[in-house]
Image (cartoon, rainbow, N blue to C red):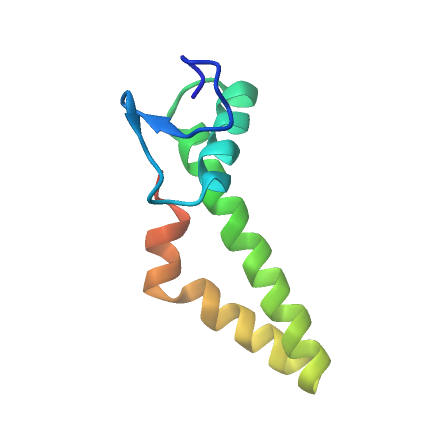
Length: 91
């Protein structure tokens, strides 16, 4: 997307990529612009998304049954294997 200058239609390796939502590509594009094209910039949007999801789970659990439940739910989410895999992925 950066090479083409086309931020509406997602391209990856000069191939049209419509199999994933474009928000992932847009977030990585912004990250590349801010941090440069490196591994950190590629993984940063996924890590931020995981952190925001943990905060939403905490807030939701807190609303349902108090701070203790919210904290436990957020910790369980954060420490799950699938969260680790996706949070550090450069997808």
